[in-house]
Length: 379
Image (cartoon, rainbow, N blue to C red; front, top):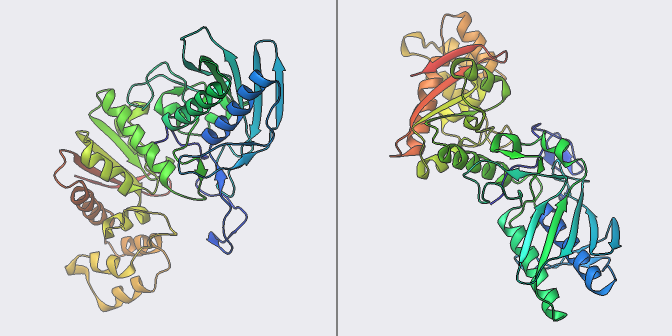
């Protein structure tokens, strides 16, 4: 699983193959930072031993695919070799797209083994709960394994012991990391070297959901008893004005309520606050666990049915069913003295509890408007 999410924190990006948020031709795959680092390390180590950099350099990914990577630069000096590869994330809105992943390889003393070092632009783990120990470079276990296999194979082919130091660097990586969730996960000084398959699938949700999971792991390791999952920065700020939770308690749920709740089901934390806008939480109240506009929609029948029985009229129902947005329904019903926000908060909390099943997690739901004003809290 990844250490953190390397996509930009902005939720949308127009890319080739998308029109109005929908694909009209196949999206192009890309390569993870872990795959790029492995290829760069392979080329650098080969040059350190033979004096020649393989270019392009081919590696084997965990599922057997063998992509080749052109080098962006190479340096061979006394006692070390460096190779760099420009990451191509395909059509995925990955913040590391276009970044140069550099591996510098040095020989170590006999029986030292393989050592990883965080160079400029690569982060260091500072909080417990991640799959890499505190103090280690933020290099995901799978990329570590891939590089270890490359080193072992190449050294064996040349009759050498695999005693090597590998330093991974990303120019401007520290600046890029500020656009990711790394700081909240306690990864300081730069980006993470990520990947489980070596392949970036455009607009897959797995990286974000894995980042939520790592946030829960960090919060549990720190002994926190209260965490906050918000659909966006406005609702997060509104809840924070109430609770002033530490940064590691903020789980960056975004649209992935299911990813948050299902992980908490098996890795519980005493108290969960879910905060979001009226439309997003209406979808949760309907039973949707993915709140993205492209994967779930507000059901106007559901909103019409949510009006208290005493306020139900045929005219009101038709007005609601004719509305274009949930916000329009909210404003129109409020003008009639009907407050739907508390009703949605109750229903959203019920869905959250049902998803958590018997997990010992108490749930609170906070509904906000677009300015961050709190419309409802339950309980």
